Image (tube, rainbow over all chains, first blue to last red):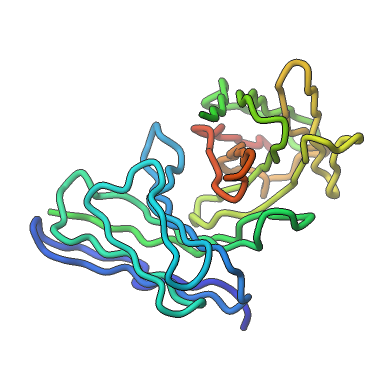
Length: 115
Length: 115
């Protein structure tokens, strides 16, 4: 099925551990994004990618690393997890700017708890 | 920098009535897009409607319409004939200028539909 899938859906990890959240899309969208959602903040952009091997920082990039070796995958790594990174993480993808409808399509989200 | 303001943390509406969710935005870029997303209790983000800054007419998608007032920098979502399934969080978002693919989100409005 076409779509965007995130894994895992739920994750509990300990402070200081490295954890990777996976994102896979089948639409061949060039742009992919990682957002985090926290109460009182809405969604905030962590990193985005315009194409394979092209990534850039968003609003809240500290403590996160991304890579995009293939167009369809955009993993997000927390190199040393902290409690402040407890959040719901959303991956999204979209067509490039200039398309008529540039809405972003979101994955189901990953609920990460750092203890 | 772009900013989205949603001033209604929570709203109630009677089933079958219409409801307006407020959204104001701020950007200095003349080219931008405004989006509304719905997030039900299950957590996924569902795209509802899009309005481009140069669009002459207000966007409509089924029971959803966007009341776009450019001079007032407002992009209110109107839901007609509310249904119980409309109970959810609603987020207004904007993408502006060269970074139009990066969305800035408001903090959301929680809508509760009363039978």
